[in-house]
View 1 (spheres, rainbow, N blue to C red):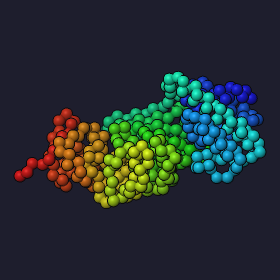
View 2: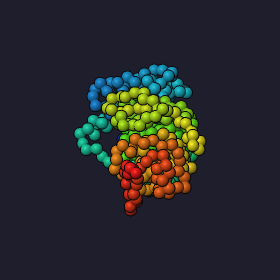
View 3: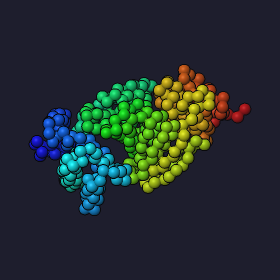
View 4: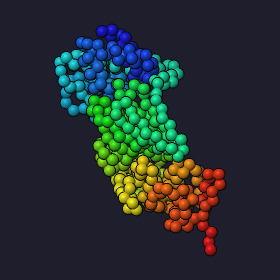
Length: 365
């Protein structure tokens, strides 16, 4: 087996510098009979190890210790970060030592080289799906997973998705129905938040202009953590949601509980998903049924949803109006009918001109 070429290609793959032709070459090498078969299995197991930038000798020593511990036992994961190698222990451990040692050397050497030169742009070819204002799109992934993309959103994934990794990059909102694969967990990168998935149904809202990322779990189990605090991971169970923001501006309600404020001002809120009392819809995922549902929603955040839903811009002339809260849903109503319905609950005036809505305080009579 041409060992040097395999490690050269692996280094390029892990550093996001590999071309489509090189990916095909790596696949052919790993499918060769004999030792390559065991190496291929080990790479799938070891792929769950996060590659963290090594900036000091202490970092490198810590990585080596963690990998050494990986090879010394077949029991539980190390700090929930390393998936242990199983099956054909003697034979596989010999290759695990080879893989682990080479990974440490490969990552350390790459970071030393790249610390001395400008960062190269991402060269891995990506598939992208973009939805414009007022439109939605359904994406069928190669592994059997499906994603419904909300308006004003972008979804990106590698063209070799499912061959060695399952990673998705989201800007906007999407509803995920992920095919189960215990050996190859899927990771959703949404702004400053990463979501680890093995097979489940959930919704993620991560618009660039919003100050928060919201994840709502419908079925299965997911693990959520902020890139600013990767050591703190939160496991979600069905009918739970988490809101992660950079400031304390995250709105809260009776169903949302502030649980922790980790470093760098990341704020975590954990809450329950509950049916809307108006029509029993689930507000967090009603959009996939072409319905805009809201429950005890401040006017400020409801206005953001209405902007995307109706493809308009909304401006408040009175900041106090943003604190009004509403519960209800819109389905076939246009923007004028929706605003008139809200006016039945809270007193305000509005004007619409060229898709721009200006909301002001109601005049006294």
